Length: 116
Image (cartoon, rainbow, N blue to C red; front, side, top):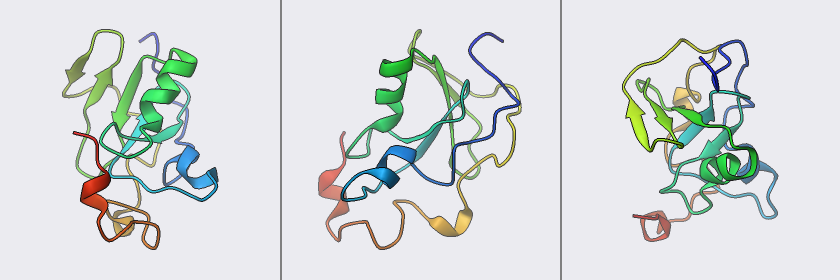
């Protein structure tokens, strides 16, 4: 399928952009670009890096990078697909990482920082 490369692994266990930010950021949930593997934070997260990656690259599809979730989001059509092709492992963030995450960077009042 155009816009999805099942052979590309995820860029890492957490949001690539939050990890390199100064100071490092945190996220609520994670999304994985189905074309290049870039892992970014969701639109509820403070920095919304997954959507920013789509805006910068035009990469159309993301898949949830959360345990137990296999859905894809199509930015171009603004629709969700409950299933799609299998992507290179791992399929989700480390289960011990938790959400929000990562541990040690999430503020005590994290709910106040989420986008609706």
